[in-house]
Image (cartoon, rainbow, N blue to C red; front, top):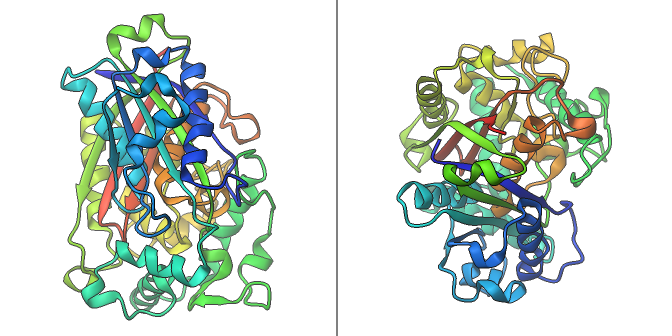
Length: 388
C-alpha cells in the first residue's frame, strides 16, 4: 500500500442550485479536507476530474479549487478528462503522484454541472465519448449507442428486456437508501419492465428506466502516503487498481464483449489474489442497464450471454451472493460525469467503514469498483479494503 483514502465528501446528486461547476467543487473540497482532518496547507497536489466538453465555457478546472480554498492558491493542480471515467482518472493520477514520491497528500475532486444545458445539447456533448467519425449519426445521443449495443446483444443471445428492467428496479430499490441519490424512489419491476407513457423507449430496446439520469454533483477524496496512515482517523487502501483500454470505434470490436473491462477485472484479480466470490459487494458503471448486464459477464460471474441468469436468480440483489450497486448505481444515484468515478470510490469507503446507513452491506471487508469511459473504452477496476 503506497497511499490510502483518509477522508471524503459528497454532494447530493440531482438538479443542484449551485450555479456552476466551480460552486460544486467548492461544496466538497474543503469538506473533504475537514473530514480527513488535514489542513489545506499540507496538500501537495490537486487533481480535478471534470469532463466538460461543452457543459461550460470555463476550462482550466484544476485551478477552480483554490477559488474556494485560498490556501491552495500555490498548490500544483491539474485537470483530467477521460469521458465517464474522468473521476477515476483523477484518483489514479493522484495515487501515481504519491507513489512517485512527488508528495504525500493529494486532494481529488470530481464534478459536473449538466442540468443547465439543454437536453439536445447534452446528448451531443456525451457523444464526444464515442468515435464521431463513425458514430455521430446515431440517433438518441449516447443512449443510441447503447441502444445499438443492446440490439446486438439481443440478436446474439435473445431478448433480455425483462432482465434489463429487473436490473433497473434493483438499483432504484437500492437508491431509496442512499441520501446522495438523485432519485430515491422504488419504481418496481412491473414499471421498469413495461413500456408506457411514463416509461417510453429512449433508444429501443432501452426504455427511460434503462438509462442513467442527467445530474449535477461533486465528490472529493483525500489521499495520503501510507506513512501518514497511523495519524489518520480512518483509512481505506487498495489491494489492486487497474486501467485497461479498448479500441474506440465499435466497428473494430465486438461491442457486446467489453473486452477491456474483462481484462481489467482479470488483472485486478491477479494483483489482489482474490476472486469475485471474495468480494462483499461491487459498485459498477450502470450508465445503462445493458452495461451492467454485460459487466456481469466481464467480471467473470457468467459466460457471455448468460448474465441474465444472475438477474433471475437474484445473485446481485442487495441480499444476494454478490450485491451490485447497493448505492443505487448511476441508474438511481445519478451520473454527473466527472464526479462519477470519485463518487463510486466514496460509496466503497462508506461500506468499508460501516458508514453506509441504509445502503450498508453487513460485514463488508472487500469492495470492487468498476468505472468506464465511453462504451467500455477506458476501464478502471479498484479492489479496496479497510486499512484502519
